[in-house]
Structure formats: C-alpha cells, structure tokens
Image 1 (cartoon, rainbow, N blue to C red):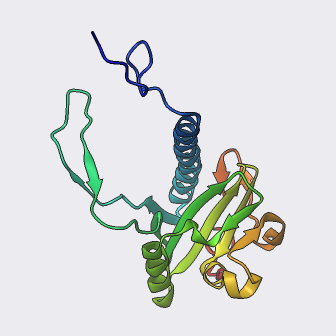
Image 2 (tube, rainbow, N blue to C red):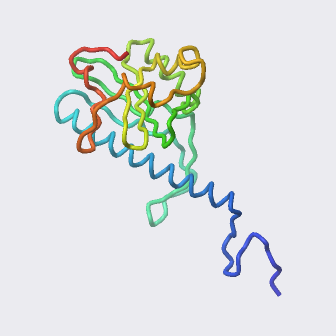
Image 3 (cartoon, one colour):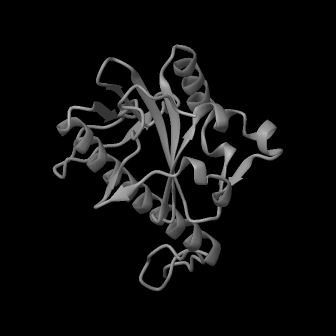
Length: 193
C-alpha cells in the first residue's frame, strides 16, 4: 500500500501551496515580460544597425554546461559569474554605449534592480567615457533612458532608493512600431543627461 504524501495530489503530481504556486507564476510571468522587452530592444538594435547609427548586441550570460545536450537541444548549466550590463555596442564615430534594461508594472523603479556587479561594471564603463544608461519600461506604455549618473546617485538625489514614473518625464523616449528610439540625441554627438 502506497503511503500518503501530503506534497503529492491523487495523480502523483506535486501539490504546491498557494504561496508556491503564486511565486511560480510570478517567475514565469517575469520571464515572459523580460523576453518581450528584449524583443523590443532587439528590434530597435536592428533598426539602428540598418540605419548605420550603431551596432549594439545583447551581452551573453556567462555560463558553464553541467550536462550534455539532450535530443531536444537542452542541457543543464549554471552561471559562472555575476551578470554584466545587458547591452553593449558602438555608435557611429566610435563611442561606446552600455545599458541595462529593466521593466516594471509598478509606478516606481527601484535602485536594487541592478546587482552590485552590474553597478560596478556600469561605473567602470562610465569612467572610461562610455554612454551608460538604464532603459526602463513601465507597463510597456512608457519608456525612459535614465542616465547612469542619475541612477547611481538616486539615493542622494531623491532621498530614497526608487524613482517614480512621474519624476522621469525628462528622460522619456519615443516608441513607434515596436522600435524604441533610445539613442535619439546621441547619434549626432549628444551626451546623456
């Protein structure tokens, strides 16, 4: 006779608690939203490349395979070091562009959305003269290019570790046909911030 396991339902599947189920759904939703934002950024990067304005690419996540690839092309892997900024590239004329992309469905964007390693990398690139910013999506409705210096100094400038959407109007960027014009003003030699 099989012993009753409170973690399994009658069909033998894991029976999640409400909290576990909600967390799992939130994780899947966050992954889907992130992928959609990446698709918009990729379309924008293609636009800039075809227009001869910039070549910008997604930074690959450094990982180490832990198993061989299966028949579905899948394998287990782990990250080997902390993530770098999401995108890196070069504007026509040779200036470097580095940015991190963040999406939120809230009315605020928080300072801790960047890891310490990402912040260190952004600061290092900024000190070398790169154009560094955080590209933020609010509900896929409003998009902003926040200068790295503004993000980095957020606690001092705002007296808190978050920015409200209404405070970012001066950093708003245009979006049309799934293309985010996040380089507007930079391609002609302009500076961020």
